[in-house]
Figure: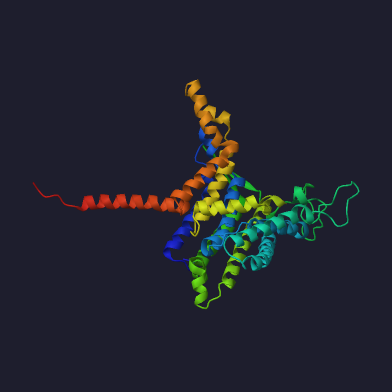
Length: 414
């Protein structure tokens, strides 16, 4: 199917099913119940799942296949967002051209940054990419945020190309060449795909459950599925085999007479284009581009996603992105009042003790939980969540095989 082997085609179908049924799968608890706190089936969060999944898939092509650890990949995420915003401000609100420009601009910047950074390897490569990302952040935050004409009539600096600290936003004064400058109601126009607004949605009520189907989510999900399919083709191609050889032993590859530099640069550019695509989707879902998307913490986040899910695996980065974004948006909202509601059946003293033990790991302390999980994965599951799933599958297969062997064995007649 689609030129894929049976195993890869099955994996693609599984990812397809999970993404299409996400509004149901992420809303397992009825509205109003105590466990509804753990539901994650609302459009904004589902969009973050798939967008950061794209970001992590692209990063995995560089890190998982070649072993080059970039600490500055968020630069391409920000470049993609700014490119999409300028496309909206100048040439209308259709997201397709905006995403195309995001991918192209991120690819061009990746060629420049990769050409310089890939002259070194190991920690030196990582530091170079981090330096480029922080320079990009500084440019977006201050240098390119100041209009060269100086202060305006109110004494405030113009916001230039990037919008500075507040970010680049849509305004009614945008010099839009194509499309409407304002909606029919006089408000700002919204991103759309050939007239279908990204924020449009429909709801389905089944008993106490409410399922929301968002046009923006399903568009992002389709883009993620295409990105995932392309990553499978890259992994299984001769180009992917060459990247694995570079990761395995680059010096030995040099001795064979093959030059690994074009391959590593190509992997870096492809990875940067994936990040730009994710940045463009972020701007399409929420028309805003800010310098914080280029900060070093954003680059560190995608590293965590890839390692947590399983570096070098196909579905691992998607799982890691979903896990981290789930904790960031769900665990962080649990406060002491919710905990007291859950443990109200306990005696007062014991209830306070249990809440005091759990509270540091949720709410504002959700990073502590993430850190502990990451440590456990690195120590006990180097292959990430994918390895955990493989171990569970092997355990059940072994148990089933054992049961089959027992049932197939014959007992002597007495």
